[in-house]
Length: 374
Image (cartoon, rainbow, N blue to C red):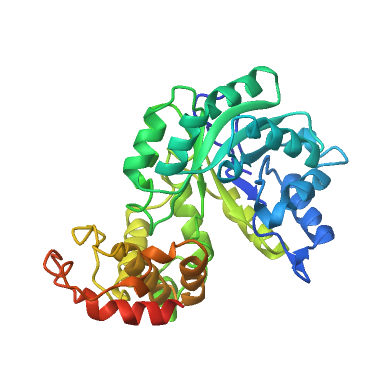
């Protein structure tokens, strides 16, 4: 196993971390025997960072992680979990959830504790409720070791959060060769590293989309002189960057664990050649060529008079087509997008079309987008 630097913290994490968000299931519940076997196999092969969260697997992931780390395995790893900020309504909730998590995982201390899924609105909530003070007290009394946050929003919000508190020691961002300008992006990666934060990368394969690309994209890998799987290429691209402290993979099968460990063992900073990097640029371009709507996310069309989040609707639809994953886009549309912002709310006023630099016929496309996503 290869080990990397972790910001200013005196700790060498394994290049690969085990994410407990996509554990194998049996009749809708975590397959405990297989999950424990997978986690322990990873640890036996050098993985020393285990990541979970309060909400993963309907609250069962933390319990499973605690079981997997019995029999001497707890001493071999650093454990990370996350505070469910969306469930916190008053300051004291922070300690209530933290104490519950410690009990669920049968541990006295969580080495790496994150505020989960921060963005503009949740960051305002953290400040309003004084959550950072609560976290500092938990660090002082030994219930947590280091404090960080995971992130899902745009770069502007990321910059505000990183610069808004001097106590951050690490952060977790979504990052892969398709997301260099989405969410925190490359700018966020470099900003966090410049400030001395360790940077943990999640979704290196974009929820599995980059590991099973459409044939038109897959062909580029098959024609290249070096033969690696699309998943290996995606992981190596992230590990190639010196600002990355470790890469989390949410593994669902033992085969995935075995393959990802092999990938990690050959990883390294600046290990990809210029030709390798060009291959991945070509792959990215091929993916983007599949985009049916030429929206650049410039947001000149916003705000919409009726509240429709035009760029987000187009993004979900395009992603469904690009990655042949419309069910995933449907899930987000239904469960995470407010009804008031959906394409179904378009009134056809066309005021957005006057502002669109790409001259997209937005009012004509919105019904089609809604039909595809419902």
